[in-house]
Amino acid sequence: MSEENNDIEPIEINSASLLETASDAEVKPRINFEEFTDEGTLISYDAFGKKQMKIKILEVSDEVAPSRWKLGDRVKVMKILVTIRHLSTQQVEEGEFDIESIERELAERSHYTSTNRWIPVDYIKNGYVLRSHHTRLISDAAALDYIVF
Image (cartoon, rainbow, N blue to C red; front, side, top):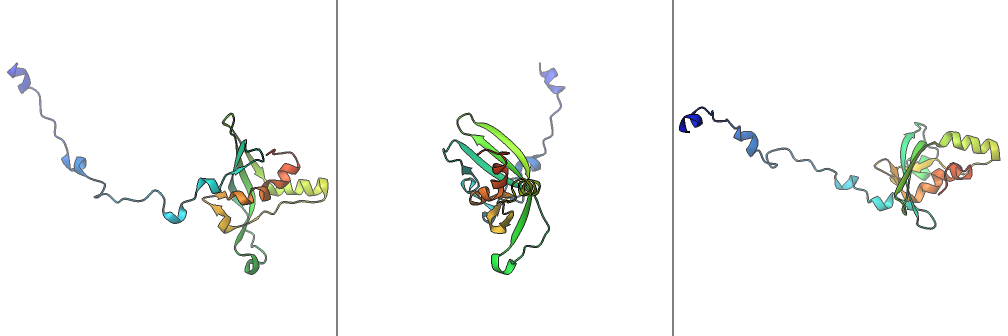
């Protein structure tokens, strides 16, 4: 048996790589405090509390906001992604909306539009719109029955 053990070569282990600790490596936080957003501020509920909605901004216009001095920094939203979760079944629905074309369609059909696509920059967190401005962005889509919430 001792002869068989002599044939086995010892394995070299690079102890430097094993001993490297997190303190030696550059540690970056996943998210800093200024970027932190409470998920609850991004989710709105329907009137019966059976659905949740979250709106992500996909595209904004490079148009300069009128009355910047009066109303602050705002962006004109062009496309959004709406995610709706049915709380009873946990079913998730997503839909992309071109707000500009929906606004045009409603103006042609009904001679009015209720969408205000200018959103203050402070009401956008990590690419999502705060819940207080959800109805502002989906009102025309709801009027045309593209979305039921």
